[in-house]
Length: 379
Image (cartoon, rainbow, N blue to C red; front, side, top):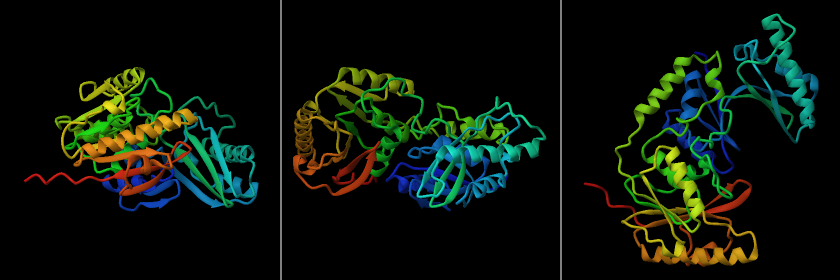
């Protein structure tokens, strides 16, 4: 199998988490850049990474990178790449584009040039003047940054946060990839209780169950690259079989979520059922002030409401005070909250042990981490 240059794209601030995941999957030659992690692999690694990565957005094949200050340079550089190794004669290949700080600033024009160059290359390979584009889909992106063109093939399709279990949504849902990141940054593991008092559609708890049972997050969805002739079908079958064999669903989980909104709890229960986890998470309709986490050395991980309007901000302040009060009652627990609230520590009642800047969508937040003692080691 040929060695491929692969890219795992990452939400801003999560690049190091994606890199750590790749290393845990056995990829050691990872290079972190803004918004992406570069690594080498082959066809089977496209399958494995799409199934297993919890915090990445998508897996791209790097087709080539070259200087492109003119349309001629963009055309010739694109045409020189081995598109025929991937795209069959009936392949559908839309071109998407981005341009930052480059002389070629018209994205539609760049997309048109790239499309034309690929058509010319495929004409030479398939000896035809017409492409129906009614076969497998290959989304190509041309990304121009400082007069350098990066061309990639998207193996993922809908972004990796779309696990397939969330059929309904609540207002401002937390992305599954971000929920997985919050868990990985915390020190939670399945031996510890986990509580989310503002659980909304239950994403943090469902991601915790997937993590706790070692369930590959992409196991319940499909990918366009499953239909690519270049990737043998048996590689996808083997990757899925490996993922099924890795599931550890005999691990006891202590996962509880509550929310003041009964509709949110209905959505959370439906999502858990869709994920095959209906009996593993205890969901309750409760205000945060009535939350009583059970057990020792647990983790409370939450993404509380942000409060856009003035009246809502007062409610958010009250909620954060409530969380601080709950923390005082649970000296062995650790508390984690993702919030844009500038005065969070003030209302919580103490300084966070750690803070990490993360972006929930486009909203700049801090991930506040109040660390309790670690559980005693099992003898």
